[in-house]
Length: 122
Length: 109
Image (tube, rainbow over all chains, first blue to last red; front, top):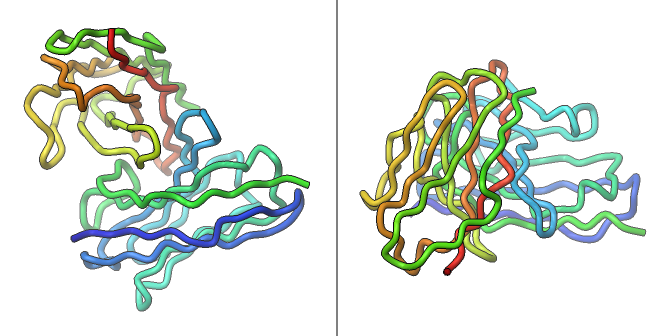
């Protein structure tokens, strides 16, 4: 069974940093591109960042470019999101998700974690 | 940036009736569009990709259509478990700059 388990969320002050993790199981993690998607309280979905299966290629939404860094450790089956210079508008539930096609690109996503809440507030 | 606009924002439908949800892009996507369902407190669930291909395990009452800039998700006969929020998402750009629509909430009439 495919499972994605996010962790690392919490309360952080504006300007602070946080690192999210997404532990994957039930599939060959190193074969799939992965992504982070966020959802502000009561709002819609917003794409944050994506990474290729090898980790060589990374992609970001303009709103987080230069502040967030996506990475992965295929030996640990884990996806990461390092978030720096956090702002109040980054407050959201952050989901990790798997691209549907092995060896494919960051496009659409068939398995999602349950999310981890990041709150940026003083 | 590709902007996705969904309509209506809320759709009130009786169980057993048909629901038609719209998604419009501000530039052509060919068929690079996905649909997701999200229930309260849950993660999104992939329904449709490639504008019209149902994902694994998705019931046949869900169908997607359209290409270019206009897309439709149709639920042929609403079941109680279908009341949720539905999002469209484009994946046309390279490098990826994915965007979602604002969502359509399907509620019980």
